[in-house]
Amino acid sequence: MLSKSRILLVLLTSVLAVGSAAAQENMPGGKWWKMPAVVQRLNLNEQEINELDESYRQSRRQMIRLKADLETEQLELQSIIEDRDMNEAAALTQYARLDKARSELGLERFRFFLKVRTIVGHERFNTLMRWREARQNRIKPSPDQEPATND
Image (cartoon, rainbow, N blue to C red):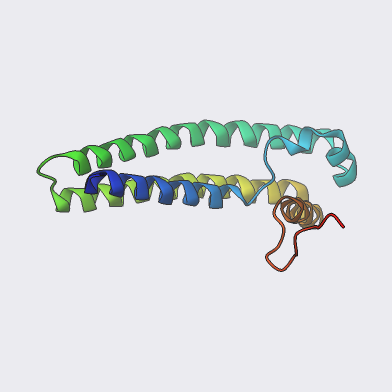
């Protein structure tokens, strides 16, 4: 049987995974601006590609640091929860620190999202978001779609 601390830890990990995934849904994955079809369709020039590369590098460096901070805060909370004489006040304080670390990581992802919007401009950004939405719809059928049958 799982102890209360193990159950809480599993729930906490699930909440963090959902929050992280939600933050990542703002942009298509990877270096999409390196794909020839995207470059052509969005009519990206060399300067824009270079700006996207540099913004990506800067953002990734920051996200790596922020992810390390987040994992450290997770470890600290886990230690508090697993302690035989758990201090509830300390757990709540640590959870607030963890929540702040998660928020900072999400904010950095959003900053990159905004930087992309600035670099590519309004119209091309909207095209990019429509592509992302179409891709997500192909991957995840909408709830009102019926499954295909083999008639």
